[in-house]
Image (cartoon, rainbow, N blue to C red; front, side):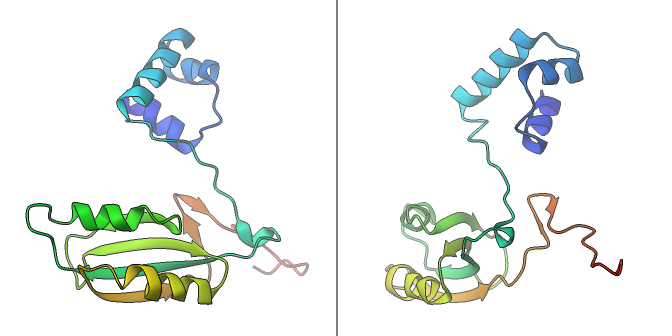
Length: 158
């Protein structure tokens, strides 16, 4: 069923009937498989990718690297739980090498809001020893989707 998961990941709008046709399966079988994946936690959610730069919404994304001291008997899990429960945190990854342990993707309305998150919420966490904040200036590709592909001006220049 890896093919089913890949199809859903690429396009969550595909109907059960479309998936069944693409996989040479019965629609009921596809639906029950999807239901099982959802109940087992294999499918965690379905998201739409939006180019917020083409809307009136003002948001800023930042990538934050965080160095921590792992906690006895809990390693990184308890610290990760504290961090990922903040609504500003959109993604959190434990890294295997480099100078930092966690990489976060956060979202705020302004650079100041992001800075306040780092200084007032993230940095004071007991095990956090260092942070580095990188503001995202422009997205070119996210989750496999290219932003603004083949945009040309009125002269035909890219």
